Amino acid sequence: MDQHVAVPKPFVGPTLRVGVLLAVAILAAFGAWIVLERGRTGETSAPPAAPADGPRIMTADGLTALAGLQGSSVYWAGPRPDVVYEVTKTTTGYVFVRYLPGGTSPGDPRPDFLTVATYPRPTAYADVRAASKRPGAVAIALPHGGLAVYDVERPTSVYVAYRRATQQVEVYDPSAREALRLVKTGFVRPVP
Image 1: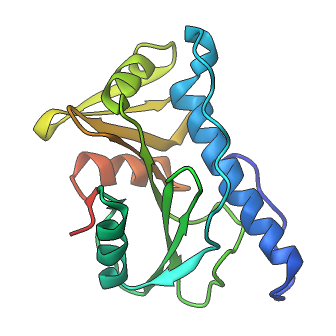
Image 2: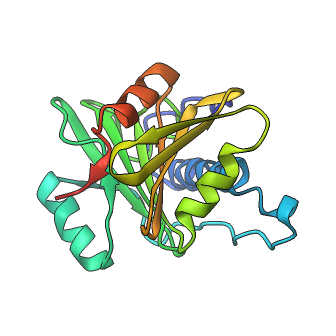
């Protein structure tokens, strides 16, 4: 998330949709590359994530309904005042929950917002554990059998998995300190 995208004109049209698709694709590709780095192990890479639904604004109840439809957990960082929850679901089942401050348009391509991504991964814990052993990785044991890892070169994204869970979670915040705080304090959890 080191790249900054120019702020588009306040216009809803093809330019905004392309920006949203680009932002989601960059976040998904970055997440897959930094944690999974499948090429090193000789396995094939996961296909790129394409948005199935454009970004939608949801309430906390809407997030609960989405999690029920998913049939598996969707993670978030809990309720926050003065934000709206922007949700994007991809064709690969990835779910991105972005916390947009009031006045921010859905689909804003800037990487300036807390984002909690849920990735379906049958081997989520093993993948995060393997990533924790790479050079530059910092691992953190979490309660309830969880493991978090981030790369010292890109500390704004913290990856989390729990034993026997089939989801890997990425917590991105422009502030590396805030991303880590949310993970360590247990704010990142399944939507109720």
